[in-house]
Every structure is written in structure tokens, then in C-alpha cells.
Amino acid sequence: MNFLSNQNKLRQWTFIFKLVMCLLIFTLSVTTTILSVFTEFWYVSSTHQDNFYAKLWMQNFDVMWSFWSTQTVFIINGWFLWTLIYHNNEQKNKFTNIYSQTSLTIYITITALIFWISVIINRCSNLDLGVSWFWKLNLKAIIFSFLDHLLAPLAMIMYLLITFKKFKDKLNSKKQFLLVMIYPVFYFSYIYLRAVILANNGVKNFLFPYDILNFNHAMIDVPLWINSVLVLLLIGTTICLIPSFYLFLNKYFYGLSQKSNLVKIR
Image (cartoon, rainbow, N blue to C red; front, side):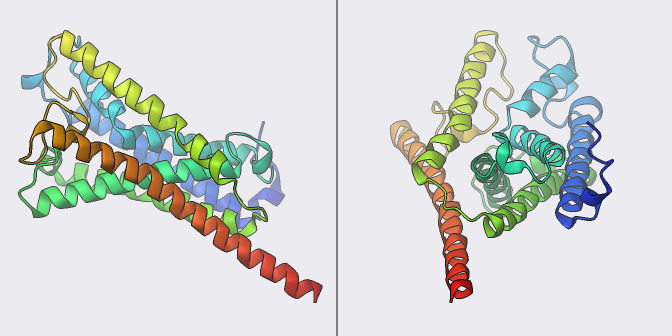
């Protein structure tokens, strides 16, 4: 399907926006993958490679792919590509409709929060959130990583607000919360299964992409069980609050559209 052949699409700014975002996010993702996995080895150097991996790039790729941020950015890239193919018919496709779009925006918002909060706290305080390795990267790597964790969240949030403004129906809160839970369940299952496999094979580096997910290690000076409870509360609160925020925005825009319709009727 040649979605660029239709000149009418190219005249629509929403199509241009999606096309530009798709190309930019793809370029950043590919560049950061090449740098982190194949050339600069951001996560594990040759002197720290675990014997479980046949090649150094394999371990770095495994670490890179274990990050929530990496997975969500790649999913967002695929989503923008799919919306180009289904331009003007987004709501008829399950992957691009407003429920999927809202879910993905929630995921990428969590990505932004995880990245920016953790690197800033690590930089400005003595609290080690397991990202001290990030500030040891060279300037080029830090800049590309910053852009990679900034562009995708901004693009999705902006486009969701545009969709909310056009969308004339109110989201079903129960349905949205259930859909939001699908990816986190998959992600955490993958992360802990991966950690078990790696630990059983003697791997020492990056058993968990985020130290906070390692319940055998306390992030702060408290008993381990209290640390675990706090982490679970943090995860639960995040998964509840961010969807609630976007549902509130949807309700707000829905209310505006209802008021506009009443004015037109009068």
C-alpha cells in the first residue's frame, strides 16, 4: 500500500505531523541502538561481559531491550507508522483507535517520568536509583538519549490531545483501565523471567533494567520488606494516576464538545 501516493493526505497537517514524528523517532531509535549496542557499548563493556553471551553486542542488545523505555519507544514508532497507513481511518483499527492511542500515551508518559526523574535525582542527590552508569556516557550518547526520551512522549501527548479534541465520545473508564494493564503484565512477566534465566546462568550485569524492580535489593535504608511495599505502592499509584489523568482530559474535551453542540442547537 503506497500511502504517500494520495496527494490529499499530504495536504493535511495531521498526516505531515505523523510522518515527521515517525521519521524522527525512527531515526533516533536506530541511532541510539547502533551507538548503545554495536559501537559504544553503553551498558556493558568488554571487560565486564558475562560468559552467558557469545558476543558483547548480544548482551548490550539484551540490556537495551529490557528497558521499558526502549520497548515503548519502538511500539510508538510502529503506532505512528500504522496511523499513516490508516490515515483518516484510525478509529476503525484496533491498534490505532482512541483506546489503544490512550494506552500507548500512558505507557510513553511513564517512560518519560521514569527516565527524567531517575536521571535528575541521580544527578542532583546522593540517592542511587541504579542509573549512575548513564552519567558516565559521553556527551553524544547523553544528547541522543535525551532526545530519544523526549520526542516520543511529546509527540504522543500532543497527538492524543488533538484526538481528544476531535473525538466526540467519552472513553469507557473500565475498558481503558483493563486495556492499560495488558502491557505492564507482559512487561513485568518478561522482566522477572529474564532475571531468573540470567541469574541461573551466572550473569551479574543488569539482571534488572531498573534496580527498583529488584526486590532483593533495598533502594533506601529500610528493611527489605518495607522497600518492597513502597515499590509496589509506587508502581500501583503510577498505573492508576496517569490513566486517571488522561481520562480526566478526555472527559474535559468531551464536555467542551457537548457545550459546543448545545450552542449550535440554540
